[in-house]
Image (cartoon, rainbow, N blue to C red):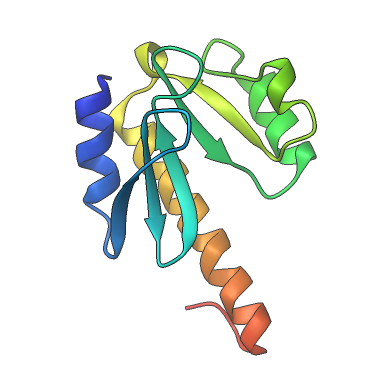
Length: 115
């Protein structure tokens, strides 16, 4: 996948807005919540948040050719994804998972249930 293809997919989701990321690349948000960053300190990568360190570590263990972290991410609930190994179907699924987690967080704050 190219950065341009990843950008197009990220922007295809309702309510997603693009902003310039600190340190370069493009960050995508829904409302004020971070969704994904395309282009990071590591060339040709996407940065995704996970809900827990365990979730992050499970993804890396399941597919280390796709997912990885650097020392910078050791204590961060997020990981890097190699664009060259990422396909559109997987990227969409990862973004849907992140959006569902954001919906659940918002519902919990409001005392309700996710959509």
